[in-house]
Amino acid sequence: MKPNLYCLAYLVYLPFVVATVFLVSRSLFRNSYLVILDIFRGNEELTRSVNNLFKIGFILLNLGYGCYIMTISQKLASPVATVEALSVKIGSFSIYLGVMLFLHLFFFLKGRKAARSHKPNPPQAPAITN
Image (cartoon, rainbow, N blue to C red; front, side):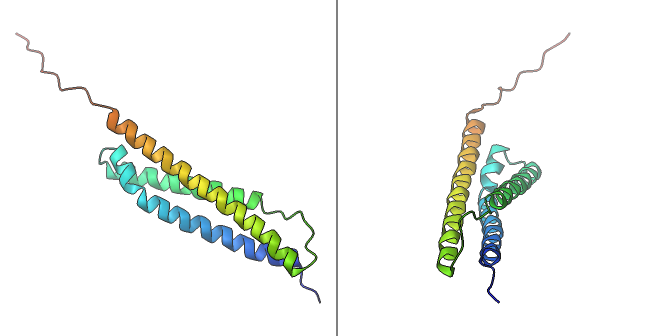
């Protein structure tokens, strides 16, 4: 019985996508915590909450895209063709994930810059009433 090369390719591709998305999201959001903490001026509860929401969104978006592009349209007539198709899928997903990582970093740093440039109003002296 000849193994189905499409099933084999999917059995390699899907675990790669899932593992890569979780590893990248874990690293990104562990290391971006301090940037978000700076944006929210030391409010740790808000920082944890926002960081977790960003992480969930990042995971859902990237897992969804990885599944969306999963279809292999070329004919897999040999193991060599299967490896070549997998290299294209895995390579294109890795490039996409790298771009998403840098976009998140860009937005985090842009938010940090905006938070630092925003100067609070100076305290006003209380009005004296007679």
